[in-house]
Length: 168
Image (cartoon, rainbow, N blue to C red; front, top):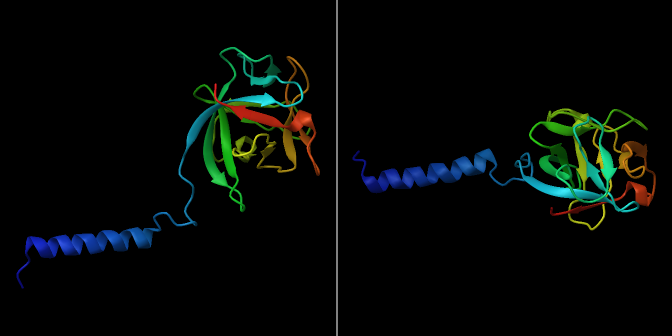
């Protein structure tokens, strides 16, 4: 059998199509691709932003400053397609849930740490930021220069538990 360039091209094309099908390129069952974007996060009730000023505690502050831009990294999706993100300030500090009614801090980022994975609806005007570890626990603002905590939400969230994401 003589193999020509045309035969190689046909075989290569067929193998590429078969490989894409077998590997599930674009399939719904595949893990979401890593997507990152930066937003400022403002509380609906206090009109203040999540802020990180050289302290492990995450606080709310008046808008403005260098410590209010957070990077969202897509690390998963809920069954209904809502994004699950780590929320990072700087290069290595991610928002971390320490438990119900406890201070929210930043800690070294770990995509697999459920306490650092947050369920956020990024397509709506206002959203809760819910812990993947405990989905009924959401970020809550507590006033100017006060530490943000995780609190339970049942039914409609309070305005202290609602956040708006906007481009810095």
